[in-house]
Image 1: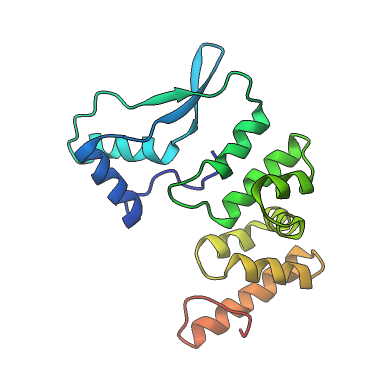
Image 2: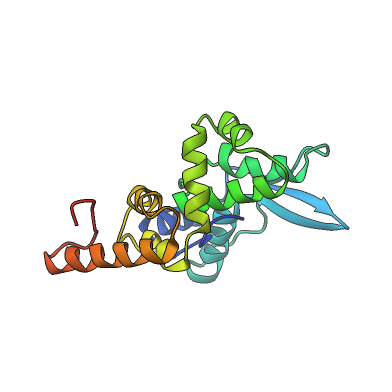
Amino acid sequence: NCRDVNFDATDPDDLALAESIAAVGVKQPMTAVWEQGQAWLTDGHRRLGAALYAIEHLGAEIKSVPVQTEDRYASEADRVLSQLVRNNGKPLSPIEHARVYKRLIDLGWTEKQIADSIGRSVPWVKNLLELHAAPTEVAQMVRSGQVSATLAMDTLKKAGGNGEKAVKELAGAVEKAKASGKTRATAKH
């Protein structure tokens, strides 16, 4: 799964999902693929985390959850792409999208194929792939909300792909934002 965290009990949306599942069970089937006699979840990681939380912490008596199997002719690329097109719950973050794009590139897809499949532009896909390749400090600033993914991508582009330069510029912007009482740096910082 491309998510950074499948379930976070401190996230109000995740907690609401767990409470709903505790009350009425899992209504949207999870999806799994069978490989070498084992089921591997391909869709529904957040629902599974919420169901387990509901059982462990909310006292829910969940005996089973609905699971459907992937199309038996689905390829690994089909399963990876489905993380983008089937995701109708909590939206994926830009970093999580980038992780999926990278997996598709590794499976032989082109940036144009990815863009066409998800209804986005090739430059958008390229920018997120650059974000994926950026130093971990950049990704951490985006994940923590200190900078937006767009600001990070723009800064990387201005730095000509020089990750160290982008980290320094973004870190400086974060410090300026904090000095002015803001929690998130913007282009003006």
